[in-house]
Image 1: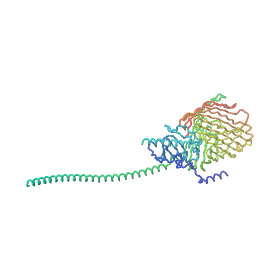
Image 2: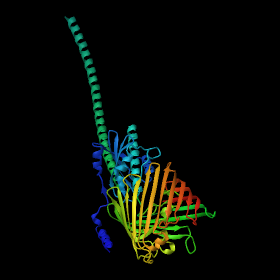
Image 3: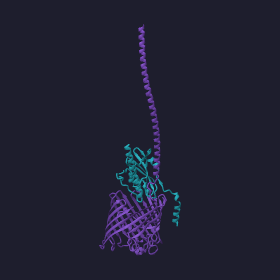
Image 4: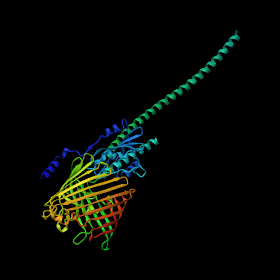
Length: 172
Length: 413
């Protein structure tokens, strides 16, 4: 009976809780990790979009992606679905290699362990191989498989987009 | 004088003529220049008109460009406001496994060759909203069910889950008991070996589900907990109080004695899971056997994967009160296994496993089983696996001792 009462109290108090955990605001992430960067927009041509969709294995509805650039480094704030909710991560890329990864906003009911530095530090210095895999093994987290997979996709996407930006500047 | 006058007249008339000629020429030049000036002025006017027209055109183009940019921004904003991945709130998935077991009883020399669609499972889930969802798992075991048939149709999970706070959820319904490694995660591509390991099968006993209420969530970053209050086992003397025989599967289950399960897990290092569970049931015979009483289960396991290397190890122990279980040695039932593995790449992996278990560990007789397994997995796709292993069993006297090969294919989606 006591359990049932506790359950009912919890059910009726649902409005008091927010499921979204904001570890760092995206603007704060940019300011802290790439201060003074120039905001840019990358419009996605068909071939770029095809590469993105192949990499993330699902349709990508956007036609442009905003990023920030400074001295050859690019910063990306990207969303990817974990299980049912988007996870927002920030990725700094320096000439094709990951410099930093931060999980900024987590909205799933489980798998929040992906925001821990012990996990995200594994991506430092990682690069993208030709077959859209990372050049290193990333140890997963038991019970957070889909969140780990989402962060993997975000990091690979940031590396791909950085490559597109560098190809574009070479053409110019 | 006359001559002088004549000369002067002639000279002046000649000069006058020359002046007239020069004047004409000058007028002609001036006229030409005037015409050129007029022409240039006209050209200038024309050019000015062209420039003005061009300026208008440039202004119009700039406006059109701005409008186009604005439209593109609106379109892009609109597209970006769509969900990243459109997904139905009702989903289904599943897994299954076909096994070929080619074993020989080392005691009798009798062969046991069996081809079995061991499991065919369908998941159905529905999200009522961001916080409330339904999850179910319907299973057909051994392909054919009914009177005298080898299989069963089982509902292993059917619960409502509600996220009552960030990283905190609760379940009400039928759920998998939070113990061991395989009990909750047993899709074929996630583990080595064709058959599930005998320790979790006979001691825990996997797959084990009960009905009730479960709370689960995380705290302090790397910790996760489960606390469940649910229906319990129902063992009796006819089955020597064997734990596996006590599963009621929430099918008109006796509910004279409930149970409580707690689990704590630490996930502080990527790839590593440390876990411990405890369960208490105050009467494991559901008040049908006065010679038996309460029961405690303690389990602990480690699951570690670092790069290619993997390691799983588990220990589980049941303690049953009462002279009934004690008489047959079932007052202690326990087992453990250790399973190192090596993943060469995305496709290939090998493992070895040593298992020991005893459902009558409380007596002094030889009732303990041990088993070696060694084998290989080939992942055709991350969610499709082919498996081959060899098992070498050591059984107590008078019991089947099955050695031989197992071959299987499994999938999940």
